[in-house]
Image (cartoon, rainbow, N blue to C red; front, top):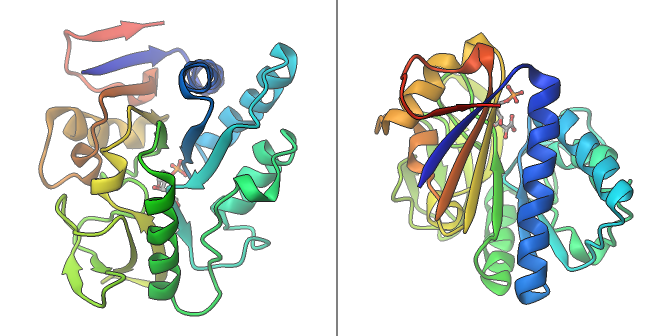
Length: 248
Ligand code: 6PG
């Protein structure tokens, strides 16, 4: 089931996302004592992570059973300002005092991108399905690093166009029009999640959100549905689709 909630502004969006994440993580920990959580990169999640670390502290939430993954990564070391892992560590994982054994790093920048994708895919196999996946969406409809028209370099050496059917849990990505590698989780892994939460703020995302909600096959974000899929959008990013929108 897919639900869209519209928040008044990015600050309300961040607070709502933090509440949803803490609720889903708490439910999972109560049910099985462990939780696998995939964090989104980019800029939209940053205030959400800040809110989540503050909320967890205020609520005395015990999150030691969570293993934290990253939906995608740029080909830079964790100390680089563009690192998604670096941002999540600063805003969330360090404030939560998460131990290193509970953080699954892509180790971007080490070895080759395909080696890193292979290592990550193997680790995912050990961890099993994700319980919560947080994703952003680009104006072009990409999510994680599943960019329209890009090429996926798979752990087994194959190179395939990015599609919903990429036969791998993780891949290295090359975009034709853009230098540099990306690392990404693939639809087969992301769609296995109990809960998928998309975050989108700002008018530039509106058309992509509309295409994703409409199931446009050319929009990678449309490929990712969990058992539950929730779009948290602010008023500027809300598509004109009428009907099934919940205004917070
Ligand atoms: C990344 C992200 C990417 C991001 C979207 C939206 O590495 O950049 O994983 O998929 O979620 O590009 O980015 P913003 O939140 O910065 O708009």
